[in-house]
Image 1 (cartoon, rainbow, N blue to C red):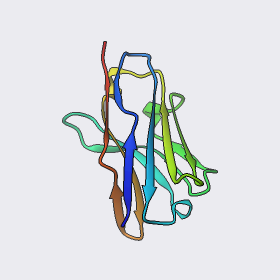
Image 2 (image 1 turned 30 degrees about the vertical axis):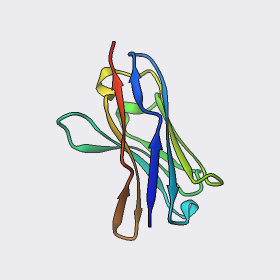
Image 3 (image 1 turned 45 degrees about the vertical axis):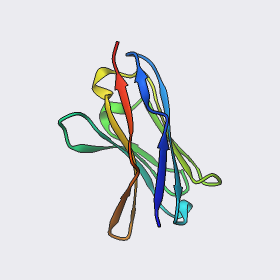
Image 4 (image 1 turned 90 degrees about the horizontal axis):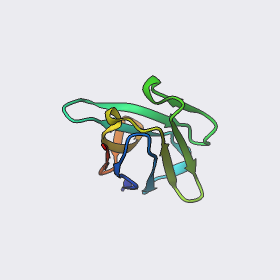
Length: 116
């Protein structure tokens, strides 16, 4: 079955950086786009960034453009999110995601807290 294992979250000061990773299994990873979502406290989960199956195309929500970089390594079934110049409003649980046919699959989430 489809599974994701996420890592890399933590507590970081404003202006700091983190690298989030998500390792996938249970499907042909390179065939599917991957996304990262964020759920801030008290808010709905929102799409942050997506990358095509080949890695040739990426999209970002406006609030993270120029600060976050999504990448993937299809040989390792891994998608990464490099997050930089962090702000308190970046605090939340970050989830990796893929959609296969009509079903969405989610990781367990990794907590990112930006605070001084």
